[in-house]
Image (spheres, rainbow, N blue to C red):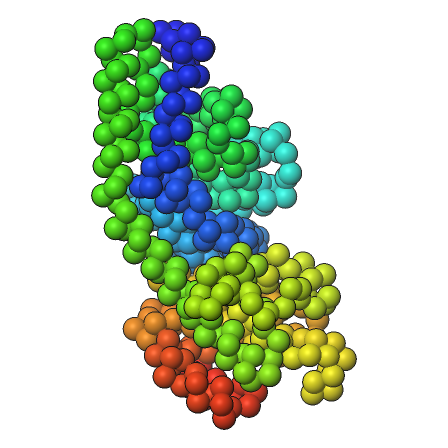
Length: 438
């Protein structure tokens, strides 16, 4: 930290900044860090990283970024709202510079795979830092600390995200001169981030995404860093700027309401599927993180199961399966089954990538005994069908081809749900208005 500040002044001013920032509807804390989809995507991104490692180890990764498993997982990270926007730029092949050199050099590619594998397997800070240093020693051209964005989803309490705005914010806040592109400089910045986070953990989080969001908003110009000199005039001006940003945050309320409307639309479709499933005689489960969402007449979880069958709960993918938007289950004894089993799984994809939803359904279809025959449905706006088909065509989803995933358009569901509930039986009516994707 800069010597112009004493420790108490620094902490008081930073605490004031954090307090204002957390109340800002348009800041990264409320718009990204508290976004439910952020946590929901952790497991799918981790699964994607594991797929990259498997392909590199097997020698099937190839030598192009487009269409690769790496593109799929990095694209999923880049969709994590503003803080990760552009995360895929570091991995795009730049032919004139021949970077990043993990596509043309098999040795560098394998080193990258070992790096990801080591970070996936280790459980402590020492192991993560050692893996970073080993990768840095190879000096792979064009492969710098942007890869830390992948590590964040493996170890959110150990590895902060990294981009230009975060570095600018850190330098502005601390008076440091961290440069982009160097793993050593990243590791030095990480130490400073951990110290700041420890001092203000009570109002931030163990998850380093919170402080990264603060640094992002400072570095992108939304907030000014507190002045580091003992200057009452500068401090007053800075406090006035804080108030201005807070006042201006009212301008983002419209966008926030639009996002809330999107969430409501998602919950509304979940409610349709819940009610239809119950009318067709199924027990219904709604995603664990959506149970208390408000819908017409009450909460999404009303009339639904409080727990999944033991065969599901004991599976390795149970954590992800609990987050599938809607599950329909047959009771024990139905169709000769000795235990309650999942018959159909529905992922509602309003606007986001289908990647996370597919990974959750794969955990169910491929990882749970006696559930191999489960029917899988992607439920989305009618206009998204072609987009969904294109995403499923990615090599990363090749295992999906054998599972007969179906597309259920919002329009068909809305138009036919009442008649299906009155006259339908089992899954026949739903299958009749949906279409096979792969």
